[in-house]
Length: 245
Image (cartoon, rainbow, N blue to C red; front, side, top):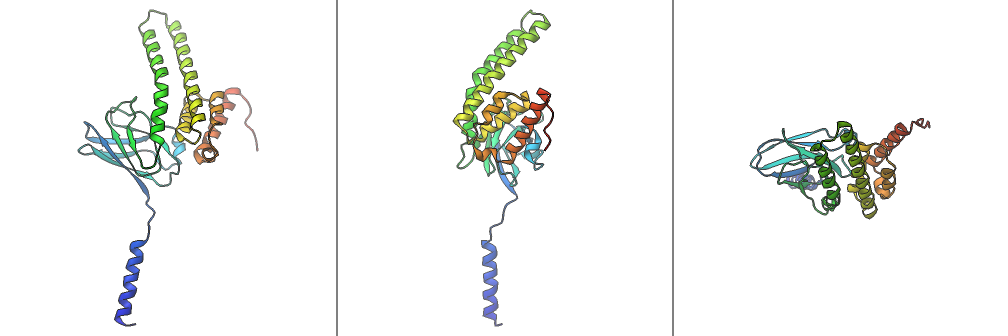
């Protein structure tokens, strides 16, 4: 083999290696936060089983208001998260399985971070649902505040509190049901149903709202797990025997 042929082969090998597309192991989550430096944590916002043992917690150091998390590319659906520091936490938010940017104006359990992700409607849908739920949340807050400042007996306060909580639950599930009908392909609809199941256990309103969701969502791994959970909570509530295959 002459020298020119050897150089040609080497050149072709270099060209092929440069053009080879490598599958990244992680999505990159860049972040910005106001008035904070130090450690910050990305944590699950729901049962960790939904993350298929691919995520427990990620830690980042905020320097000059900037931080970076990594999200496994094994995730194939949007997932709910929170961000916390040692003494504060954000409201839950939903991230797609993509590179994206998170901006946190204030660490607050009632304020969602802003998510910027190319060709995504998830964050705007998440904010939309939160805005629909806000009046009933404020109503509950006012009711509970009135009870705490009342002179009722403890038993009466407990009964009135249960009534207020039940009213809030009914309104919340109705809002999510209507939202799931309007956005059947949205994982925002799905995750709020999953969170409702985690909080309330079995409720026919959750099951009915789930029927509004698209086949694509229902065929996902997270939906299969949700179906198992809602079946188990239904059996536990009704005392029915577990079906044997």
